[in-house]
Length: 147
Image 1 (cartoon, helix red, strand yellow):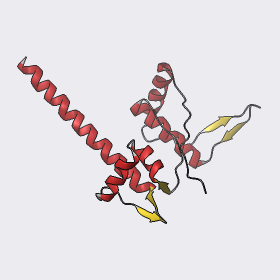
Image 2 (cartoon, helix red, strand yellow):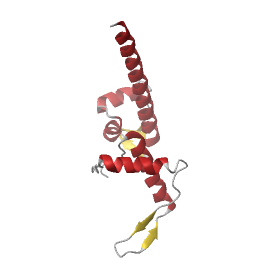
Image 3 (tube, helix red, strand yellow):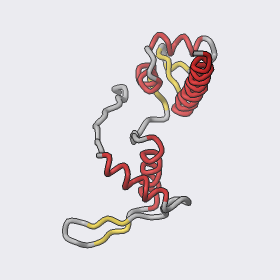
Image 4 (cartoon, helix red, strand yellow):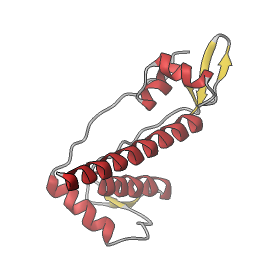
């Protein structure tokens, strides 16, 4: 069995596209319940609710953050894949596991991580970065007031 890898393809949107997405999201604050697709032969096909939910989440993320990543991830991640998701090196990830910062388990001699644990740690790290950035900006404002 080969280890799952994260393959990425980029879809870039223009500033005008982003403005349109933001306008559409703002006009539907409760979310969009469904989407329809116009097929190449002109017929209209209602998309399944699961797909509509993914599209709505992608639009909302794009509107809020200016970018979005959509992908699939297995329930159990190798240390390499988990490290890639977290944006850290494999040794750093294993150190976090040893320190108890993220739950891990062994499959034979290999360390594995639950997707939920990786995503939870990623969210915590991003929140901590936002707090640190806000503190730096506040400090900068205070220093500017002395100048």
